[in-house]
Image (cartoon, rainbow, N blue to C red; front, side, top):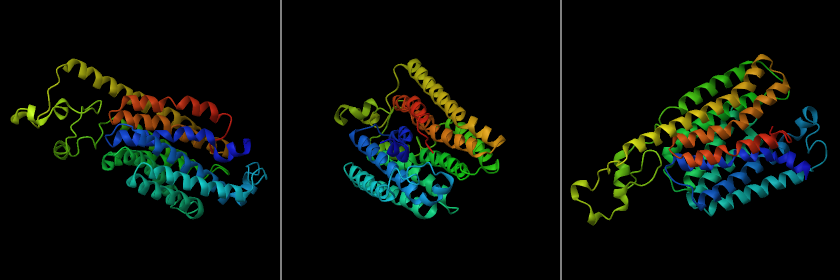
Length: 338
């Protein structure tokens, strides 16, 4: 059992649910039971990638990491490959319960995962493929919640950019390298933390279309406006498409200010979690410090996902996602995430 926990890197699973939750928030939808199906699908596909990764690296690990489950003989390579295949099938089956569109996104995600582990990992396209996989995982949450996937693209791009930087650093975690990879990771972290504090560029991209579809929502909580719940026959024609004015402007302003504060705090936690080990690795790019930088980048995904949800106007989702961070840190001390 310990060997499988190590092979699948179970502490890293805490970084997965936030993808679907942030995707649903960014797409302008609330989490639904279909979101749970997307999370379960993501977990299966993530673990499939972990098992397949060690199967593909078994010969390299025999030299650089002989303690890993496959080169040490604690798990047979055939068992790891079978687990990767079974988890992939399970992930696609779970996505199909959420609908055709989530299944299509999950299919693209599974294809990206297998392509990365078997072909692209050792090519210049490797980090880009890994970034695309994580971005697709976020879009899976938006698709499962029946949200507007196009509105989730900025959040998917932000998460993918972070993973691109982490994957670039991870290429040097076994033998060390130059300080340029962690330095570029520091720059990426700073840029993402700053961009998160700005308004979501997708929120008001198509106001006319949203009015036509009856999707006017409160700018903070994402709730339908009062006139969308009121029957059309009871509304004055001149007010049919007008937004009902806020009867408590002071309270709404305070709520908006609290949301901005939450978003800023989560962005700061993200920056601190990722930047400190990257800075140490830049000063001394040894294998040990580089591995710590990669682990910090993985853990930093949780506050990043929470900050993206807060930017999309979903504070409850943001807080639920952020609550996964302590567990990831605690179990990450017992089993390596890299």
